[in-house]
Length: 585
Image (cartoon, rainbow, N blue to C red; front, top):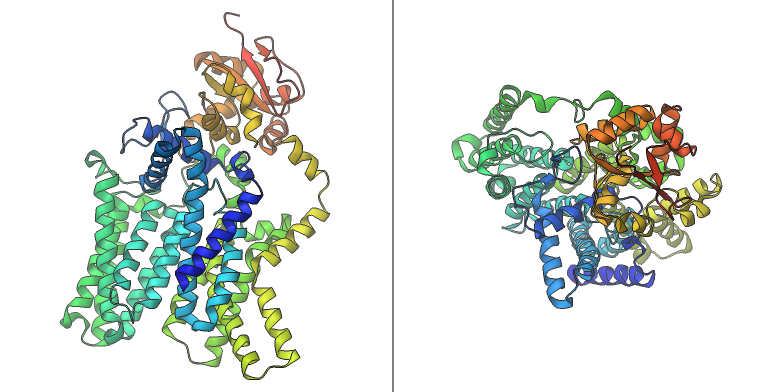
């Protein structure tokens, strides 16, 4: 039943996207990560080593090492290979992967969300979970065609881990697979570390409270988590790098912590002497926590710093502070309050519903697992709005239970009043309603947006890069938000790209654009730049021009072209204006 419901929602979403013509395939709304992911997959299929995560066409000469995982590249490459064999076209095969991968993940996420709602609130919560959950997952955007970065993978795996934990008391293998999913989502990216840590801590605390019911679950979860972490470590990291600590990607740091935490929990839960009484369980788990803290403090203290602590101050000011998904709730309240309703309304409602349940008594194991994950996700989303993709999804579970209770009341004693209240519960639980309202309110205060989209002032359409793609491959000087699409749509290389490890390349581009034309020329000549690409309408270009009004980029935006550049024919007035570097001047 749950699988059938997930397949039906998958089919509906696929048909809706097909009816609209899959517009994301030619304009993905500036999703730089998905474009660079496709570049990474192409490089893998072209022979770049499995362990070699260099992005050679971005950054200074020699490129830089990306922090992403091959665990996402592998299924995408497999789909492209299979589709290419069937169609005979690499381009068609890529489009198939761009549609199939996020769509399959959407179906899997709906499936596990539905099962979680069933475990949480019974049969009556299944329909609300399918409808409300599918709407929420669809409108948060990470499952749209073309979305192949890794955020949808992480949400699906995290939801699977939660769902399996909810089923664990009645399913002997569920806890093992929950640990497996928790390890995989951590390996894919460090963004899910708060949720994985929360799940692991919840399992340990439940074991302390109730050994008879939770002992087997803690043992199996720990074994699955440690075992898969070890497997990922040896299959995605070369032996030569096993001793290299990386705080932003799966490495010896995450493996050591995961192996110790998982294996330690499994051992504590398996040894009778360690778990015979609650006091012994508290001591045993406390010692394990102390050992984990010691490992981090003594061996990897650098990973306790803020995620972007080593970022150059200029990059923080001119890049990170303006990244849309990195904005905090407090910034949104001041500058974009309409978006707050779209991203925070349903999670807040979900937390209120869980708090009311706690106040009324009858707190259950399911409430603990769902509640703590929802609260943590909300806290993360208050720090950076990207966390709201998790809080919106987790909130579907208590909201579905809320609707289920009203459905039960309507069936027990039908009346117009109870029916209206049930209808209100349905409407208020649908995140798309809040998102739609926020969009309408936001649009009322924005003028010219439709014309901007037609003109592609932000340079997001694939067609806007056609002129650049026709030119012979060279190094292109461009702003960071043009970096990924230039790599995806052409054979050129670039300096800048919106990635925290590409510090040298991003600073090189900033030095050129913010400096004088003479400064820019020295950089262009010393690094063999062949082309300069300018997107006048980009908010990034406008920010840099305002920061250095007498700088090289500001001059280009104002139409002041130095003598060592010549406009490429046919690009004047286009979204992307291209200038060729004169040779020998």
